[in-house]
Amino acid sequence: MNSREIAKIACEALADKKASDIKVIDIKDISVIADYFVLADGDNQNQLQAMQSAVDEALYKAGIHAKQVEGNNSSTWILMDYGDIIVHIFSKEDRLFYDLERIWRDGTVIDPSEL
Image 1: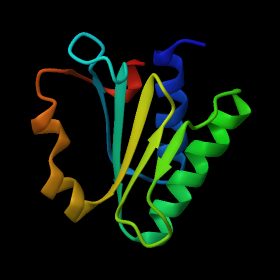
Image 2: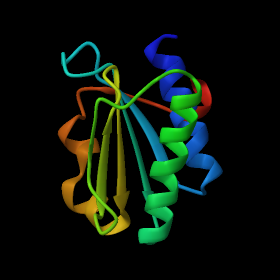
Image 3: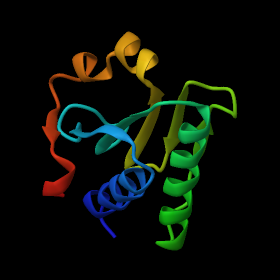
């Protein structure tokens, strides 16, 4: 399974949990840390946890296991590292504050429906 397919599975899992503003940033030509960032935000702690669980379960079923997960039940930013893709789940406030879209603006934003 290639990294684009993995990103698609993650996006679908996030959408199933009503994540807001799901974006994919293609960074493979500008960074060695991953091929894609998947970003999404949620309205509250429960939704963020549900989003994390949904992504983890969907990718686990596809045979993809997280290398590292940063964040816990009270975190407002959860980072899930799957090697070729990194999933960032934010509260709306943290997403605005950290503004990864601006930091990684040299990457190519891909609409999740185009994966």
